[in-house]
Image (cartoon, rainbow, N blue to C red; front, side, top):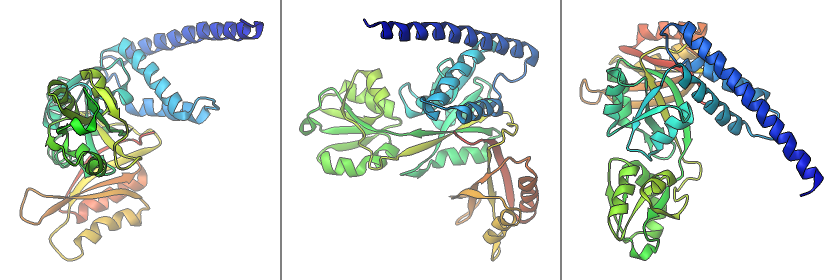
Length: 354
């Protein structure tokens, strides 16, 4: 071993010791803050968002901003766990993209609660069994998740955050000879994201829809001549080989998840507000819904219509707008909006996903 290599490794050792000291010092401060909160919420989404915004802004490399965010998310996760355990429900079982989204947002120190359905995730948060829930709301290829939108309309819960997760689907199986695969299991959304690849490579195989990609992997592990379309984490969990990586038709395939909870989130400085509303039954009503946003200079980033439960051919509209509901121009627009809309519900204001 060269002297130069020994010197560099010695420097790394000294830095590791210093990092360990500093991380423990941070953890001690987090514990003190936890004692001062006096049973207040363990998680402050706006505070954690500000930390991530600051460290990414100050980052000079060579680590990427994404790597820095991941590193500090895990540090905050471990420090948060010293205050109190944080439980998060997600669409299970283990090995789903929803679990991956929960880990990306909350870190590995979180206590995960897999649920069989999106409805169960909402119920777990509503009855206080967990602190937060993680639910998918839209995919860049397949569009909105209707059940999540319906439950947001009905539930008293708030949207407390969002997670953008790159979705890379894999073909998983015990044996990887494509000609031997007679059945493919997957969630309907994943089938939609991969239908071009499946048509070109497994047109002969039957496609069976199941409740989750993890369930698809479980079935593929139990049945010969079958495969699953799922994430690589599901393959590892159920002992399947990754036969083909990235079988999604769009390389930029991304799913947006929402964090749901019982508390409003304070402004972080870079926020988004989600709301749902319906128009009065008169000419120009939909235009009137959007006019207050334009007058007050509020940018709309999403508009999604959904059939209402109140009657035939009636719709509600889900909107995402830039800014926090407490911001002056957003608050003014919401006041006007409530005057012209038949119904308005603010689902929550929360930090924009980094």
